[in-house]
Length: 138
Image 1 (cartoon, rainbow, N blue to C red):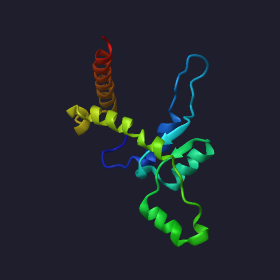
Image 2: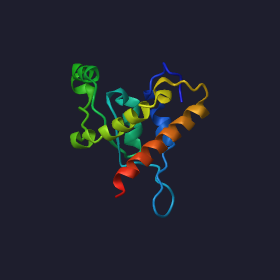
Image 3: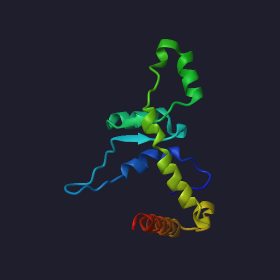
Image 4: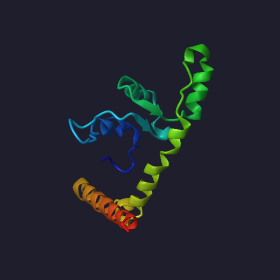
């Protein structure tokens, strides 16, 4: 967690370092197949990190970054590519974040300590999960 005025992009790599996805057997996976994010995460350092870990980058390029690259001509490098269809699936995460923020305590960050804020996130996530579970059960 960072201060409210801090940007999210510097936390990109530390968050990915903590990813652990458990499977049915064996060690948890620490490397996702792809990372889809919005243009705020299109920095060169984020892209380099993903490329070094052989993770597919699904992040569109900012207009100013594209303009700077084009201005450099052949020294500007290749245009970044991303899977448009995979990028469209990013809205699933956006919808979840909107559901989390529908709870006023999460959206306004009334909790002062990181532990109590995280507890609120867990509680809200459990509420969403139970609600969705009741919809799918006959």
